[in-house]
Length: 365
Image 1 (cartoon, rainbow, N blue to C red):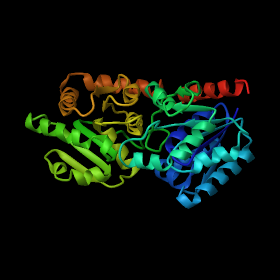
Image 2 (cartoon, helix red, strand yellow):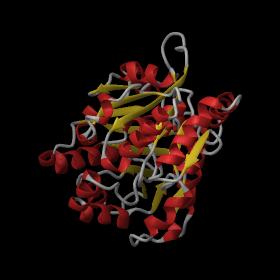
Image 3 (cartoon, rainbow, N blue to C red):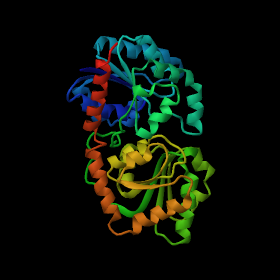
Image 4 (tube, helix red, strand yellow):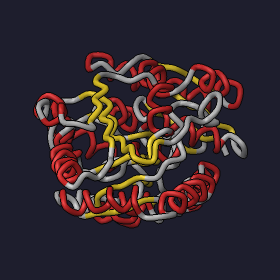
């Protein structure tokens, strides 16, 4: 099968999927220059170029979006694929591309977020709602990352029969094969919150749980790494004892080592669909503590602890249990390793995705 995979955003996801697909199929991968540079290690990018047909287009600045859609169309037409697979994200580019292709190829769209996160993501989604709708309407099939997301996507007006759930695979901070050099020593008392600190991620809930840990002398050390408006809003609380703030865009290797040396990542999200943070944490070999929103519990499975959202007491209890219950951390680590090569391994995800492609190609016209 000849597969054109286009990702002017979500480059890390698309690169892993494309590499796994390329073991059995001919693959064209089209990436955005800036997204690829931020999310894919240069050596991994070079390896991709040897395994498949790799093309790079400019970053999707607003004035360039029609041009980028045309560039993607040109690469696709030259490749002559059996199927085209794109990633939905808040620009006009992919909606325009689907319109330009005009039904010449079956189109599959991965909808990473069937409904937007609260805050700035919701504003961006509202601005591009017409283009989202057009892309979804023109797609022959749509992929979401969890059964819990099928209904919400169908509720936007998409035929439920065109939607399939295929999980998001593990991410290794831009590398195809883990960290360079020896693995760092794990600090069994350290939890890490990392990424873009937006309101939906529940940093206030985490800091309230941390107040409980301090009051009860629970020896948890909390690392907060990343950027975002919530850091400024909670600046005073972030100065509490046993909190380390690493503000700014952390280099991929540094962040990978921070996560790999933590007991677990903690995701106190108040609303979400799926999470690249979970995928990256599993890629670093660590379990998570996450809230039961969207499809997070499906992604975590038995490789972490799940608590209700907006509940500092429950989050604090999970932290106490993680560092205090004998054998728990080792059991979770083993579950992470099993999921990373099983249900969240890229070859299984590629095989499930291929089966979906084949079902669309075999469907009556």
